[in-house]
Image (tube, rainbow, N blue to C red):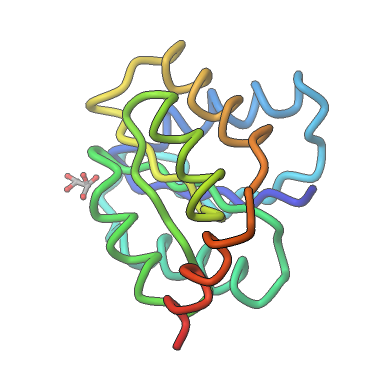
Amino acid sequence: MRIIIGADHGGYQLKATIISFLRKEGFDDVVDIGTNSADSVDYPVYGLKVARAVAAGEADRGILVCGSGIGMCMSANRIPGARAAAAYEPFAAKMSRRHNNCNILCLGERFTGRDLALEIVSVWLREEFEGGRHARRTELLDQ
Ligand code: RB5
């Protein structure tokens, strides 16, 4: 599974933590598009870049981190084919996969602590889409 990951200055530290976690868990195809410092940047630049890569099939999943997860989620969902969800706890992450076939997870470094964030990532990567009636609904998103 290729995972593309990006952050703004509000999320770059959690991004680094997630990348280390992913490698430790055996997800070794991780593409990091930055940012990698506290210097202020604009979250849509990173959100749109990750969403375009996922929508184009250049990556299987995307992870975006900003201060809240909200700006990244708004940005990613502007791209047809991107199904981004901001999750603050594991059940939302699980349901975003099962019912919405979420392909981009958005996290907020200022809202979610390290261990909880890694639990959210872990659940989200392992849960499968249920398909069926949910597939009809996700197809409607792109029409
Ligand atoms: C940056 O200060 C902050 O606005 C950004 O990281 C994010 O939370 C936006 O939604």
